[in-house]
Image (cartoon, protein in one colour):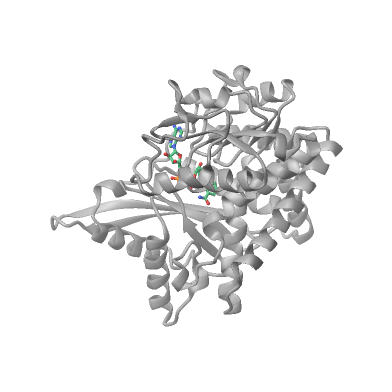
Length: 425
Ligand code: NAD
């Protein structure tokens, strides 16, 4: 049966729709020509494959695999592979475009890509997931490549899956090609510093913004939603730089302590407690976890899931600065109110780009056949993040727009100029 693309997303509060809304505003501000607008609106390549897999019960199940390259004008496409039951082409297309903007904002030589396999990894055995990952890799042999398209982990995949991908790709090419994928285990060529990279970039963005807002880190308070990789690293590094973290949260609830939470203790507690903060004694549990977003703090870091700051709660937000660790935590409609309230919001495509920056370093190290120290990785990624922040801030002043639109302007301008110089259409 022919592939039927799901209807476009209608929900205006959907983060992917939100991305296109912001793209349109930035394109208008830039005076982007219709020709370039149409090129950037459409992905360069979309591949859909059927993946028949023998399941543990002996039956063959056919999964659908997708890979979209939004743009490779700045360099090879870069973007994760999502294993999720509801993943579909429209979503992958939008996420691929998102990667184009994110890489362009931090000025790394990559285009944007994204992949997805419609499956439920939670209901699959390790063997089934491995067979699926290997089949997806084989089906995408012509798409992937260190100079063409470099995947990475995303929702439902991690270093284990990336190791299988690298192995399958390498076998097909008769040599070890570790630069074909990032987010690998360290021993296979993963980079030091990758684990903390996104939280670290959030910290650098937050400090850059605090400097502009004249907020002294040693007198500032901060609330962090989400205590996984991004949230806990951001909280820890911000605490190290003097901020008082008064609230943290995860799926088990939100925890508040006006005198400040000891983040190292909270991390140790989480790690010894099946990965959750449930029962954490260093703070009081809030009755409604969403209250965390409404606390009277200087800095708010949403670092859990998308669409948490919406038209429903934005009026109650009291923070002076929002630094988006998560992808798409603020809806487009809430944006307008954030701006009216005079809150600075450092957008996801800038604030959480530390992750893709160190993924880029992983690829650079693989290609060099060399390993950098954690200190070198951190120093270089801090510099890239700070430069990107300054660049976006300058654009926000120049075009008199909020940081979010400024980030899109910086990204779209770079990609559009490259198209114009390269020409050929
Ligand atoms: P993670 O799975 O390590 O952590 C997610 C955390 O959020 C967990 O603590 C979970 O309990 C918590 N959580 C889930 N639902 C919640 C809710 N409703 N309220 C409060 N907490 C909730 O994931 P992560 O890697 O830290 O990613 C977090 C966000 O950052 C995602 O949006 C992800 O796309 C984005 N991001 C991650 C990276 C990266 O390098 N890991 C890079 C860029 C963007």
